[in-house]
Amino acid sequence: MRFFLSGVVDAEVGDAFSQARTRVETRLNKAVGAKNYGTALDLIAVIPVISSRLSKWERRLFQRSKRAADYRLHIPYEQFRRSNAQEREKLLAQNALAAISDLDRKAKAARLDFDGARLAGDIKRLFKLTEQPNSTPHRTRARAPQQLNRRAARAGERGR
Image 1 (cartoon, helix red, strand yellow):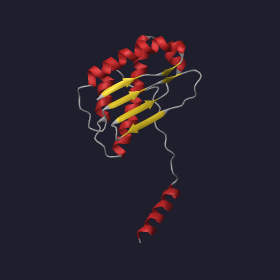
Image 2: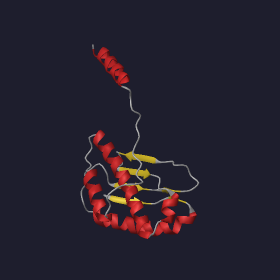
Image 3: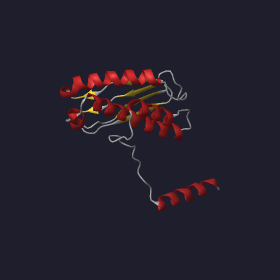
Image 4: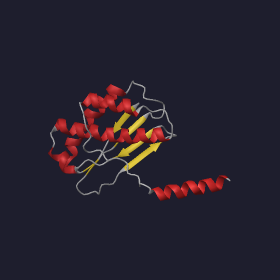
């Protein structure tokens, strides 16, 4: 497995991002590159969006046929700008963890071979992380119980 880090960043934080990105990408690939986390993924592209001008646009793409993922999750601009070098690296690692968490959810739903929990644990230990303050979980619309009952009834009618 290989990580690719890039970014959609404002010019004001571009140099700081570049330095942190290089260190995080190198550490990630050295630590987890040779390990086996399943056959579902070969490449995870983590491309944080760090901008004071862009909306909180995100992309969560898992290309199963190519065994690749492209995640563009938001990191708060002011938080990144005010952070020191070590904190910036942690923000990037937390962004990668948020992507892995979502990939793990998608892989489990599709019954694919991906050990996201073990990968996340390895990254948490590597960067000494305990929480994910900037993670943005995937939101699904909750269905009301009566909607679920109607769907089940319709499915039963079709089966007769």
